[in-house]
Length: 341
Ligand code: 5MM
Image 1 (cartoon, helix red, strand yellow):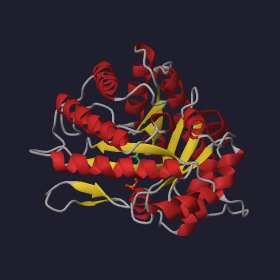
Image 2 (cartoon, rainbow, N blue to C red):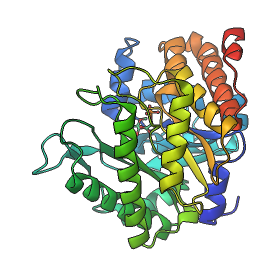
Image 3 (tube, helix red, strand yellow):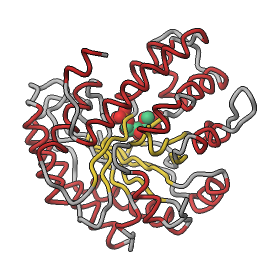
Image 4 (cartoon, protein in one colour):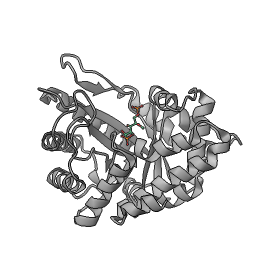
């Protein structure tokens, strides 16, 4: 495969394909495993992820790249094959989460800053050697009364821009993920407040990317959709699609090859329906696809339940969601396909 940033970015949003976010940090994967009463150990995490990466149909037809956590990039499958090699063998690209998580931002109560810039140049060089060709950094923006503030938005955008510049220097495509939360506290904000905040955040992020001389052709944006807070009324699929496309058109330059959404706590089917409605009804200058964590994995995790005899069932559940989202990336998903399955 070509090693040019632009070519990697285009491959990450190839027709009918999207990204599997499997980069849960140790704390997050423990929470997920708690829901199926499975102890989170290096081996159980390896078994779970090996199950996903060996789901041949999903990986070869619907998944362009997989975001890994540091531990996973270094892990080997039971037969000794590095997990990153399994991903490559399926025709998909290994990627790596390089941020060190969101921490409290001093002087800004209720807001966070994502850490991990120190030593990033050296870590990126190592990750490149381990096979990663793209990376991910997530800035987290909450909505509450008086929040977000300009100070927090600006500092998170600056960190995303410096991360992106360092990635490109290392030959790695940055996924730039500024997530405006739908499920922070109190999560009762309206869809229009989400639109207003997301527009502000994305505009600030692209200003900072420009100032940091980041090549827009060699990056992927991973935003939230424009959606009501988790505890507010639920807008229709068409309204989410219309408002999301409007905000993206107002803020994302057409030089960016692709936008791959996070699911952010939407149900599996909501995340699929929203993506499909956008692709079915709007002309856009960039590819629009998925980079889902929970919305691709939740059903597979339940079907697996930590038992080796359930690996095939887990893979079927994952393949089904990957196929539904592949159809959504083409704008051809229909709700009756879910029922048929
Ligand atoms: C897989 O979850 C990632 C976050 O992990 P940590 O919180 O443990 O660092 C997350 O960044 C994810 O990649 C995106 O938010 C998309 O995941 P969802 O579940 O929102 O689609």
